[in-house]
Each structure stands twice: as C-alpha cells, then as structure tokens.
Image 1 (cartoon, rainbow, N blue to C red):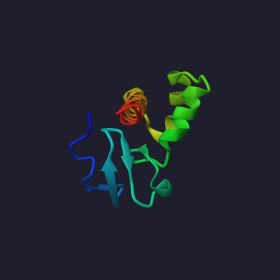
Image 2: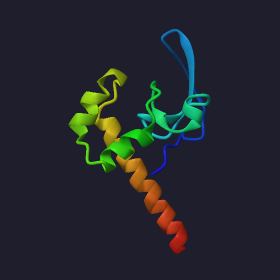
Image 3: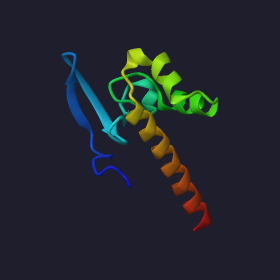
Image 4: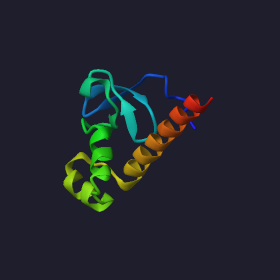
Length: 98
C-alpha cells in the first residue's frame, strides 16, 4: 500500500534548518539534494540501499542498529525498508506478469 502523501513534498525544520522530502513511508524518504535523491532514512544521509546490502550480507538487525546508532535509525525503520523493498519487488513482478 502506498503512502497517500508519497508524491507530496513535505517541508519541516530540523535543527533550525529547512528540510524537504517526499515520504515513501514513515521512516524512509527521498529528500531533494540529499544523497543524489536516493532513498534515505528520514533526517539522515544514511541510504536505504546500504541497510538492504547489509541485510543481504547476513548482518543482523541488532548489528546494523549498533553500527549505525549515531544515525538514530530504529528497528521499525529497518522493518519498513524491508517491507518497501518487498512491495517494490512484488509490484515489478506483477507488472511483468500482466
């Protein structure tokens, strides 16, 4: 299920600075000008793809949270990334099969 606000630019202030992003979920965003527009965890420069690559390399959620503690990512954020990746894969497969 897609986020109803996914195509809507959200503007907030973070640390006294403007922060703009398109939400892909509660924790995952695409922020113009951040990491080349690739999905990141909200309020960070940590790319979602890095966490997916670590999961593929058999890192545990606990290890990821420990290694990236300074970013403030959470277990629900990691779960959301996995769900979004699964949704994208499912959608791509459905488009091919259609």
